[in-house]
Length: 140
Image (cartoon, rainbow, N blue to C red; front, side, top):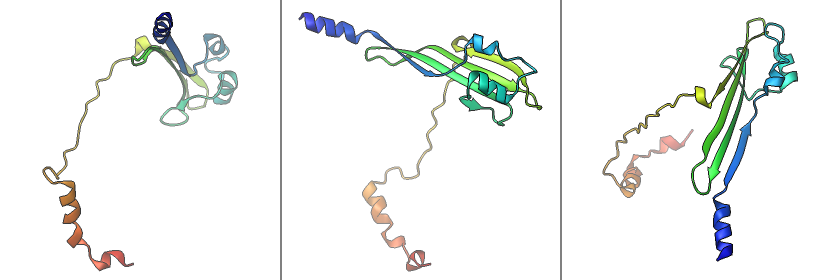
């Protein structure tokens, strides 16, 4: 009975999981706006997780930390996005950090495309195609 109690309590401990990478403030202090270039940013803080729509527009570093309690779904404890923007000459123009508090919940709409085969069984669909093939369709 004691073993069952210990195992059940151990199953309820939180598991923390880290994904991605965002540079620390100490690393970012080494980057100077208007001076550093893309190459020097990569040397100081590493390669980005993603780029802007146009590769020259910016670097993005993304990290997330989740906590899972037993069988429950994971919940986000921390999420960060670091955006480093570049001007047209390739120099750093802005550094911004966004956290979980800055995010907005986006309601997703679930749209389903209606099919035109309502009320037709699979067997009827399969047999309905038997007379529709022509020999010319298979010859090149």
